[in-house]
Length: 390
Image 1 (cartoon, rainbow, N blue to C red):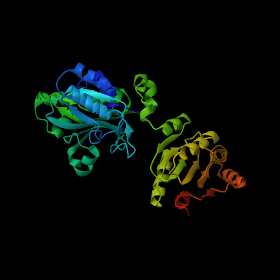
Image 2 (tube, rainbow, N blue to C red; image 1 turned 120 degrees about the horizontal axis):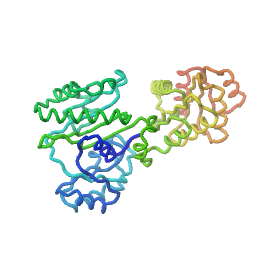
Image 3 (cartoon, one colour; image 1 turned 90 degrees about the vertical axis):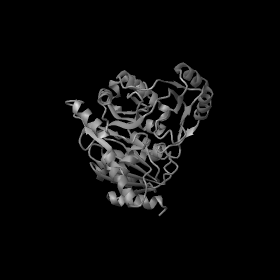
């Protein structure tokens, strides 16, 4: 689950992570009132969507008067903001965050993520604040500092020193402030079961203080039961409705931009299936993991969700029956054809528990657009051919 910038900053403030003052607004009039309440002569009007790159897309504007606050808020609210993270379809802006101006002397990047190779949280920092961290990693990997922290011992002074020395922060007072900032951010990550925290940019002011000028946070959905206050921050208007519907049926679904629908059991097999489709010259339209408790109802729902995508020209069902039985999947396919108009070719590869029974079920059903496959490569090749009209 992701949250908005203003919500991330509310959490930061609870842990002593310094941020500029700001107030969220739903209308231009409210934005002006918020700016007046904050005081000062400069404000920033920020679109609130679950995506980065808002500034480049026109979603972050500097205002030097209350009239400019009203002007920018009017333009941003209701706009379809397109960034490198939203895709070409963009996201509708329904809220803006009015924030006081800041005295920016230097910009940094600071984030906390899980390093799956090390199996540890890592703190990432860079002097290239305000830039896309992916671009920095590609073009200047030497400018990214990575410090792994073992949760058994937590954030220690030597972690902080490695960060400040790597960033070239030499002033002792500024070093203390940065280390305190990083330690607090690590606590936010650990104590809230976050999957990712990103501050870009983290700024240094003229007085040598550090402020989170931005804030992105993502959480482990499975841990939200321990954090009802965070779950209350969920903004379902920012989430894909098909992904939410799939979740209610125990399906893991992510929409992609290809033309071959995928229904697979197990995340690893799903990734392998998509890779094989790409290798064969096709493009996957989705990631759909039916999990280990699939039945006729969930499989039928999976077909329904996949076929909502008008770009889907074929569906590849690739099931290796271990926990989930192949005959259940076969019955689910039959049920799907009764409940959903399956108007595209369906390539089916079933192997493992009760695979022979499943093959018999599908054979006796005699459904014209269901095509049997012998293995992963065969299924992917047939799916690609079917999507191309062959």
